[in-house]
Image 1: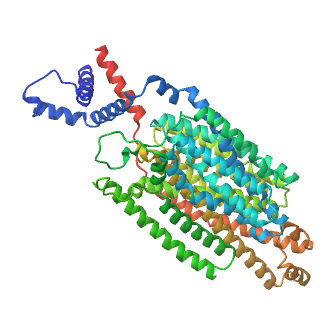
Image 2 (image 1 turned 60 degrees about the vertical axis):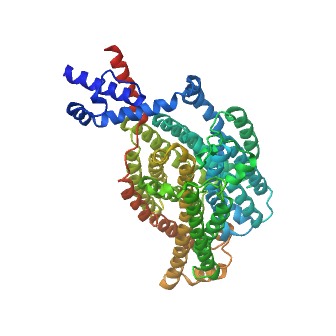
Image 3 (image 1 turned 135 degrees about the vertical axis):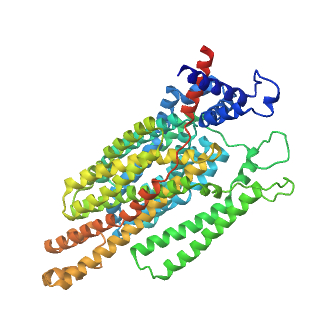
Length: 622
C-alpha cells in the first residue's frame, strides 16, 4: 500500500513538473520516446494526471493576481460588500414582482379597465425580457458597474412615470420603461455574482442572492398590500428613494472593484500591440442593429401572445404580429451568424467591415447543457410568475380577500423558496454538482402544481398556502443550481452572455406563462358561465343579471355589485379558470424533469486545486 501511495504521489509530481515546463531529472531518449513503463504509468494515472493538469493551468492563470486581490474577491469582507451593494437592486426586483402582482387588479379597477389588468405585469415583463441580451452585452463592453448604474437610472425614470399616471396608457408606458431598467438589474447583478471561477464561491454567492430574494419576497407582499390600501401610487413611489440610495452605495462599494469592460483583444487582429478602446470603439462594438431587430421581433411576438390570450387568436393584428415578429427573429439569427463568422475569420482589420460583437453568441447553443438549462429556466419563469399573479387573482376574486391579506398569502412562497435554496446550497457543497438539486426540484414543482389545482378546486385556502411552500421549495432547489450549471457550461468570457440568456429564457417563460394562463382563464370562465346558463339549474334572474352586466365586468367592484347568487357563479367560474391555468403548466414542467436528467458534470476547480496542493505538500514532506 505504501509503495502504491509513493507511486501515485510521484505521478502527480511528474505531471505538475511537466505542465510547469520544468525539466525532469532523467535525460536521454526517454524525453523524446517514452519507455513502455512510462506509457504504462501514464495509462494508470489517467484522470489523475488530467486533473493535476487542469489544476496547474488554473494556478498559472492566477499567478498574475496578487494575494490581496484574491482575498478581496473571495474573503468575507468582499462577500459582505456584495450583500450590502446588491441588497437594494434585488429588493427592487422582488418588490416589483410581488407588489404589482397583488395590486394589478386594483390599479386596473381605478381606471375601469380590469380587462387590461394582465398588461400591467406584461408591459414590464415584455420590455425586461427583450432587453436582457442588450444589458449582457453592455456589461461585457462597458463593465459591470456602469451597466448597473444605467439600469438603476432607467428603473427610476419608469417608476416616476408610474407614480404620476393619469390613465392606463401612461401606466403601461411607465411599466415598460421600468422593465428596461429591470432587465439590467436582472442581468448585471447575476453576472457580478457569477464572475468567479470557483464552484464554492459561486455556490456561496448564489446563496447571497437567494437570501436577499427571500427578504424581498417576505416583506414585499406585506409592504405592497398596505401601501395599496393608501394609494396604488405608493407602490411605485417607494422605488424612487431606493434607486437613489442604491446608486450611491454601488458607486462607493463596487466602482473599480467589479469586472471592467472586456478588452478588444477578443477580436481578431494582426497586431501584437496592446489595444486600447475609445468610447466610440465601445459604442461600435455594441450590436445595435441586432438589438433593434431582436427588440422589434420580440415585442411583436410577445404582443401577439398577449393579444391572442385576451382576445381572438384569429384577429388580424395577432396574425400579422406573429408573422412579422417571426421573420424579424429569423433575420436576427442570420445577422448574428454573419457577425460571428466575420469575427472568427482570419481577416485583417483593414479589410474587416464590422468590429461588432454578436448580441447573442450562437456558438453557446452547441452545448446540450446550455440548451437544457435555458429550457429549465423558461419553465421556472413560468411557474414563478404564474404563481404570484394567478394565486393573487384566486385570493382577491374567488376568496374575496383584501389587498393586504392577499399579499400576506403570497408570502407562503418565500419560506419554501428559502428552504429549497439552502438545501440546494448544501447539496452542491457535498455532491459538488448542481444537476442533482435541479432534477429533484423539477420533480417537486410538477407535484406541487397538481396539488395546488386540487386545493383550488375545493376552495381550501390553507392547502393552497401549504402547497405554495412546496412549490417555492422546488423553485429554490432549481434557481441557484441552474445559474451555476449555466455559468460553468462555457468559458469565463461567456459569463455575461450565458447569464443573460438564462435570464432571458426565464423572463420569456414568465411572459409566455402569463399569456397562456390568461388565455386558459378567459376561455374557462366563459365556458363555465355558458355551461351554467345552458344547464337550466341557474335561476332566470341570475342569468338576466349576468347578461345585463356582461359588458360591465371590468372591475372587482362591478363583480361585487352583482346579486349574491350571480356573484357566487362568477367567482366559481374564476376558481375553475385559475385551476385550469395551473394544470396547463404541468406538461412544460414534466419535460423539464426529463431534460434535466441528462445534464453533464461540471468541472470542480476547487477540488482539483486542493488535490494538486495536497500532492505538492506530500512531495515536499517526502
